[in-house]
Image (cartoon, rainbow, N blue to C red; front, side, top):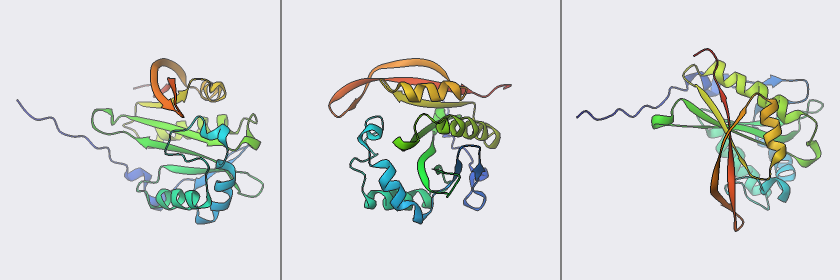
Amino acid sequence: MSRQQLITPNFSAFSKDANPVWNLQKCLIRPYRESDADALAVEANNSKIAKYMRNVFPYPYTIDDARSFISSSTAESPVSHFALCRLSDDRLIGSIGLTLKEDIYYRTMEMGYWIGEDHWNQGICTEAASVFSEWVFEKFEHILRLEANVFEGNEGSGRVLEKAGFELEGRRHKAAEKDGVVLDILIYCKLRTGK
């Protein structure tokens, strides 16, 4: 019986030397900068956002949390977390990023995002998720599946994903606990077409 080879994808297309920047109609997506720390601490320090985030996203969200996240994000190779910024002044208003899967899941990536409350219901996340997800399929030829996990009750995020071309694939019942409450997780998926 032969031992299965651990498959780790080659992310050389996602190198630090070629970090993408997207100038969209409603926002700018770019790599994080140290100068984003103050804006990150302000925008992320919101219980309405933290409520739907994994526990690695702290609340309250302090300036030290912001600096630590930016430091780890800019040190990533490949860089997989990006700042969502206002077009008018390049100020950070949110974040979008990828979790790179390995082993038998190496053809799947998970996408996550959030945006500051003052910027909700303006189509910013929909535009960002649409463009970012298409870029993933263009840049990573081995990726067949992009998924996003949404806490039950977060209807806004579900609408963002549906408008960005994701489909509700299923529900993992009682899959998570946040602040002492057991929740279902909704699985949204976007598949590569033509493969």
